[in-house]
Length: 456
Image 1 (tube, helix red, strand yellow):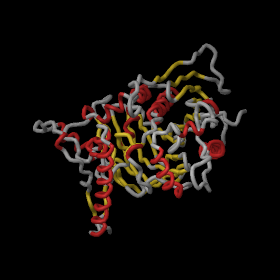
Image 2: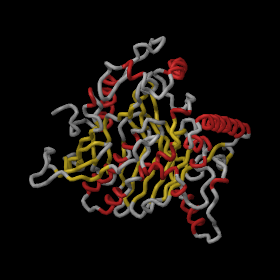
Image 3: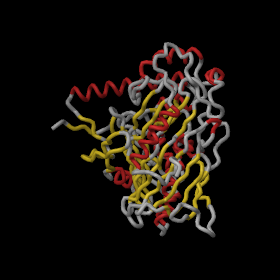
Image 4: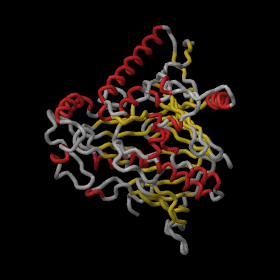
């Protein structure tokens, strides 16, 4: 059996570790020892590296910006740059990471179908397809803003879903999110680890994503593949996510193992995803195949993974049509996330939509966006200094820290649990006849409304 066959493996943690190792040896570009950037390899997904010099001239940076920034960034090669580097606003998109967490909700109907489905393997197929659907949005090469401690994002008016996310830790950066409708509950604690390789960045998702389907109460747990951002400074930036995605039904032991193909020469294998839905005895039941930027299909299979006679490949999901020539490669749903049309009444003042740097960038004013970004970061440092001088500790509003620490292939993660207070808060507002729509144009972004406690 081929070594990349998704059916083969000695446990998914070891499989993922092997995927990372193979990926690193095949795709990583060493820049150690470089004084300048001459000879730095630029990877073109459509055509190898022969046109590296030409590719380098097609980056988003001006020549003088590339030169100066490269001199600064050389010392970080091999390091985790999650929160240690101040980045220029010109590489950002007008969206916070808390908003980007909500992009997974675009195709939430897939989870509705999973909850309504009686076949346990089809249920896993729909749920896994839902997790894959967000990768079309994740291929954007712009960086979202890092949330300010205490920042939140709220979303309503989409599929009956209520979504709340909050930045619960600054060092290390940790975000927590909760979404719910009549069919499912979604909870995530999100943390990333990065490795800067010079002209590329490896991103390892040290997070925990879980879905509870309400009809039967089954709990699904996700382990996603790592991501690599290529041509970070030189050349046209592009994203790849090679490795394994594993979704496990913690209630029954059934699981899905999908392999995201790495991009090969001349784009071979790019976007391709293949794998199986397995029962608890690790026997394949459903074949899944497709491209994460286009569509996913499925077909029942036998114990050898071969399609069952008399069955056919059926499409489970196809990406919605996106706006043409959009400045930030946004989908229609991404624009909705920035819109106040998806905001509830009496929007929290800590909401990402109200960030002045985000709104300035959205309007095209890079100078003002950079100024506002620096101002927010300076105020965050001042707030931390003041809080520590008073012996106070930061306490999130909508999520509680737990004593649970869960292992992931890339490190341990401290888990935050949704405390239900936002549901009570929103219900109180929605039931009050006296609440009027707030003029958001007059609201000032204020994430510094957290509760404080004294150390014991």
